[in-house]
Length: 151
Image 1 (cartoon, rainbow, N blue to C red):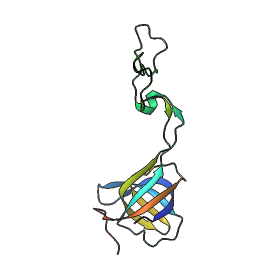
Image 2: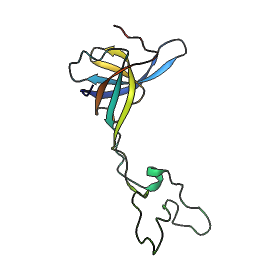
Image 3: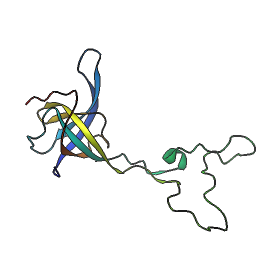
Image 4: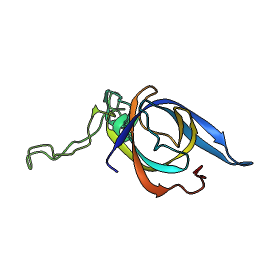
């Protein structure tokens, strides 16, 4: 189960399964010849989230910023205090501050393959990365609920 299959993220769409049932899917293109990817199986999806560059505290951590009144003319997006003064005389490790945001490796477990059309696959739900990015699929032994297997 440690084998990874490389695929390329194409686009997002939706599939109408039954009357009134809509499933969001992400279409990917299989870049390797793999007969193991069939409809109804479960896969783990490994990809890298979109990088957002150097981001401030409001975008990166959801800080609310300072007040708009009471003489605060230039503190609207500032993070506020970052620690005590004399003791401990340092910024504690892991403090939420501005910095690089995104570009992290993300693993989504138990995503179902809804449709197989030649080299194209429809994977249930969103997957990380931008369109055209490389994504890894890892076969899983679990069966997806609500998806019929063609075999």
